[in-house]
Amino acid sequence: MDQAPDLNDALARLKAFRLTWNPGDIIDEQSGLSADDIDTLISFVDDFPSSD
Image 1 (cartoon, one colour):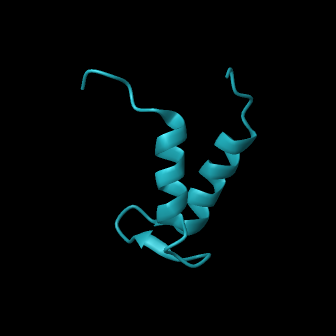
Image 2 (cartoon, one colour):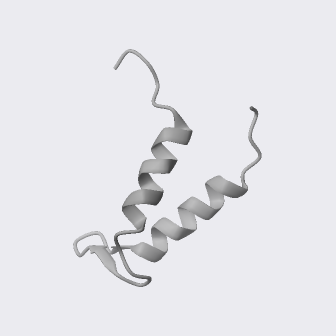
């Protein structure tokens, strides 16, 4: 990879993916990843101060 991925682009894709799941849904049985886990990550990134 020549260039680091853009965090804003990645976050937008993660948010769009999250919208395809209901709250509490398990996205991956093996790892236990849930829609609520993604909500937690999105909230953290949204609340983190940006250096823009």
